Amino acid sequence: MAALHASDILAQFKKDSEALEFLNKIQFQKADDLLEALVLKQKGNIQANLGQCKEAIATWSQVLASKSHGYLHPDVKLRQALCYETLKDPNQAEKLYQELSQKTPGETPGKGPGEENDLSTSKEAEKYLRLLRLNKGT
Image (tube, rainbow, N blue to C red):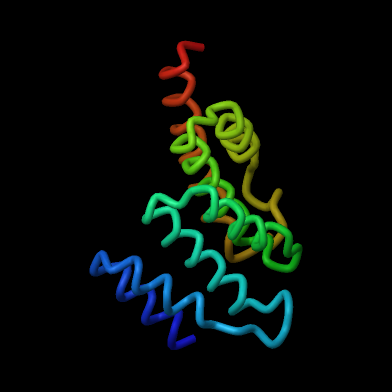
């Protein structure tokens, strides 16, 4: 947990390389652990900040593979879509935006406290989808 906080602080001060080093040192004892999911999400965020979108997408895919942390999925998918845009793969980005924009609160695993996040992520996805389609000319 300390490394997760330290990496967050370093990222806030634009020291993403150092933050990534902290996260890469973390060893997990138990698969499918909440702390592991949060670390992987943060690691993907930092990789994306560093322009390592392929690596970030792979890291976030590990979070998406965990059914028990479904409340993290909408935000992670939105971040993946943004990375796909960076990688010049608008079709994959559009697919994710479309999927997220069609969700309503409670449709994603983890119904309950994360419902507001689902709705805000859905609205963000709609916004990005419109912008992407505008840029594509569709």
